[in-house]
Amino acid sequence: MYFDWNVVTYAAPLLAHGVVMTLQVSAVAAVLGLLLGLAAGLASLSNSVLLRGVIRLYVEFIRGTPLLIQIFLVFFALPVIGIRLPEFWAGVVALALNAGAYIAEVVRGTVGSIEKGQSEAGLSIGMTRRATLMWVLLPQAWRPMVPALTNDLITLTKNSSLLSVISVYELTRAGQAIIATHFAPFEIFLLLALYYWALISALAYVSRRIERALPSW
Amino acid sequence: MVTRPVLVEARGISKSFGARNVLQSVDLSVHEGETVVIIGASGSGKTTFLRCLNRLETPDAGTVRIADVTIGQRADGRPADERELANQRRLFGFVFQRFNLFPHLTAAQNVALGPRRVLGIPRAQAEARAVQELTRLGLADHVNKRPGQLSGGQQQRVAIARALAMDPRVILFDEPTSALDPELVQEVLDAMRALAAEGMTMVVVTHEMRFARQVADRVVFMADGRIAEEGPPETLFGAPRDERLQRFLRHLEPQRDL
Image (cartoon, chains in turn blue, brown):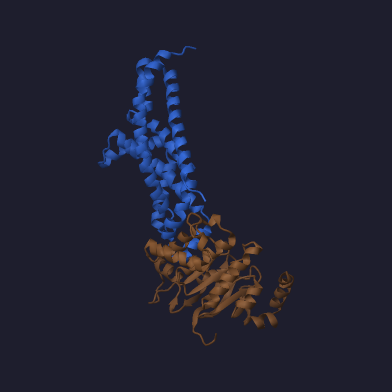
């Protein structure tokens, strides 16, 4: 087997540009996805049947369709109804919508798993369900949420490689460009895998630090 | 007691869980300043009845009135919305068997949470009042500890302070000492005794017969989802008429000697 080290040394710094783009698109999508997921998760715990139904539909749709199709829908279908987004923002929107659905389920599940006596105690001092959610249940849910949220953000970061199909010049797309000119798919894909692995490891490390920094009792 | 006005009046409270009729048309009046102790075997419906009073459980039938408020109804007779019901619910304080303190908050924050978030009292003022309530319950040294750092007896006293801080008209106690180690029971009973002596209206579900004898103005014995017998403790314990009550008290006999 022949392994072309020259391509690797040539490609390694070129791919750094792609890493930056991957980080940018993932970070923006992560922030939006977290906000969306938190809002949707809390809404799915509300009293409103309508609101719960809408969230249910959203989560089911995202879970029931491939991300690749969702990306194409945002990029190609939205312009049909007059919303035209540049590749970067189409990518951000698609990733955030996707992650938001899974995060909503994490929020709903974690907050819902807080012992029933806690919400009863909130009600017993005259709090509404909403106040109980905000001041009693949610503050206790942050820490147990972190591991599951980390999984979702890791998935989001890896999923950003799919944005190569709409020409977002992120890591995977950058690698493909090099493959196209140098035809060394094995070396480049291996290099891409290592880059992703390093990125995800850093993310996991940060997440563990956050989890440890959050109060437990 | 009879001369004092009625504060809480439950009429025809019924509740089923599936096919099980847990409560069958229970009536109970509690007078201002009175301590009513509810006893009965487990499964007799006493906890469910207590939870129906403040609507932690929604009764299938019956009404609960406290002062001039009918729980779950607005003044004009229409059903209360959630906010209104929350307001009505805080006329009752509730002390849980397992304390149900908020583990992420200190003792003072636990007590101050309701005043802050429900009554809108500024934080400094709410926490000052919380410290005052905690001090009254002998917890001055523990105001900044979290529930996890407190013994069961201390936690239950924090829970009582949390109920008191909302200025309830009556406090409902759901087996407040059942989850405690035996040596911690007394401190909680003493706190409750002091409250009763100060004239707080209380409804207490408990298995502590000595407390019932000494503190209750009236004892209610529940069996099979109904009130089987009620009366002053001397009569109820001294000359029980209901056969189930006689059996219930006989079973407790060895415990009382401990």
